[in-house]
Image 1 (cartoon, rainbow, N blue to C red):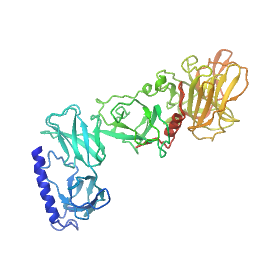
Image 2 (cartoon, rainbow, N blue to C red):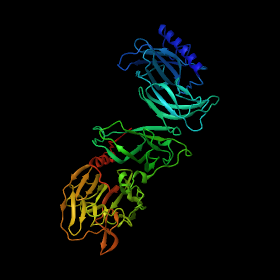
Image 3 (cartoon, rainbow, N blue to C red):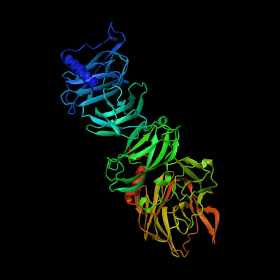
Length: 557
């Protein structure tokens, strides 16, 4: 390998000196009469300060060029830029090529991929030379650690393993997005893509981890003013990742998304839950648990991996790990994504398993929601009941510490409508026909304590969060605190905790017997209902809204 590099280096330098002295003319008019099927390639290179870059060695290689195999049998054209930074190649066959360049004095570099030679003269967009970086590739299982090597197709960049353990390093890689790093072995014609679309920053080192996965993409969490606009840090946050045809190629992943993985940039795995995955419409909703989302920051990122074989990657979606019930990890006591078929159980994403039974709902009740699918309630008889929750972890004491949230879309303001909560004399979110959205905590023999917002826009998605913090209470709408003043409505009815949690209607009691017929039925859509025994911060609530709304402000690809 070393001898090969020395031989090629001498050859390249000789060609560079020759290019400085004389240049072959550009082929025009279908390549000229002597070479009717050849074309010309012309471009220019600049330094980072915008000045033209002379004395830059430029190579043109076929896209599939393998430096470990092809360099001796098929050397490719080399040119050196003139004082205007211009390079020219003539007598080039039609096809797809890669251009690489190195400035002979500063050793800055550039790479231009996907050069399609079709026309008589292909004029390539100018590019900027920058400091190179490195790519460290973790050795996948089954490689030949003696005869194996990694390489960047279409370039002279490769690295022999020669007994390396753990990883191999590709040096002097031009900054930019490298289409792929491949693996091969001496004496074998089999080539394998290790990773596609690898970003390399000037002077940086890119780690290729999880080599069994063909694809990886960095996801930025932007909390600056240009993003989610969050000042403080937020912990134990379930970030919503929406996958679409614009940011993800569903054909490269397993049909149900079983091969996707998420990690921190230090390779620590991150728990995730796939709420919905539809490769036909090319939409998916995935919840990813972030330990800490840093405020006023656009440098934090996580990594999405996909494209592994079924034998390498079994499904790892784990809703209970994302929506943890432990107080130190979010305190989620009930989470219903509401994406089920309308006449099936509303599954609780937490380990508590408080699944909801639908009443008077049909398959047509499942409709497009804010996050994937939602459930539409008819305002007359449909609701969901979480059985056996009257005395469970959703049963908070008077002056307790908890929060209730939901995305709601109300069709009418003609009557009072229940959103979600635990009976009429405990706690709940509702729409009051004369006031607007309300969050209510019932005081024993004293009546409801109410925080409220103005009348809502109809047929518009709104994000509601009610927070009870001991003797204080707040209602948030679309990430902003609308009311923190408690209005007492006198009533001598005692606090009643016998009701199960429900969505879409109050569960009524006759004396101490629950009647499976509700009242104050909701007319509209409800999505993503959550109950927690933690008190979320204002930043946490705002981040939920900014991340979950249609125009997600947190996630940047």
